[in-house]
Image (cartoon, rainbow, N blue to C red; front, side):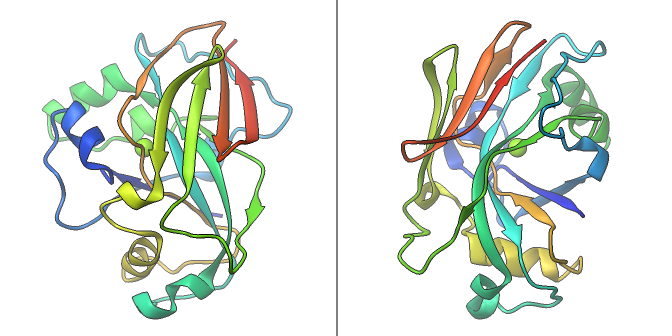
Length: 203
Ligand code: MG
């Protein structure tokens, strides 16, 4: 299983972190060990003082492929959910300032939460999916797939030019504006439309 993540896929989020809006998808990856298993507590990591939660729509790959054309890309994923790409923002800022890779800030053990999967059905309007993150019962992040710079099919096609996609791989499609800090004791809950797909407390 591979975990792909797209960075800076929403204009407002790219701007809030002072990044340029990309002209092609920004890809990074996390290892399998980055996935928080269900019924496992999430512990605030000891190496950061600025933990951010990035709520994102996540796709589940359902067919093996390589060099997938955009017009066929929708045949390669069949599930969607909301997840969190946890980020040690202080470490990421330091690495970015030195032009170094992001793994220490993004790919650590349990840095990734994936909600309950929803099947993608023909009537799902993929370019109009609302999702959001609540922290301590307050709305902190809200997005819609139509705000993505690169849509699902473009992302799948683009990734497959560099990496083979395999059944069970997942793709985090980027976070909208409103990323913010989390502290011990926070309760997070992620939704697609009005369906709650995960709940998590930070220990
Ligand atoms: Mg992210």
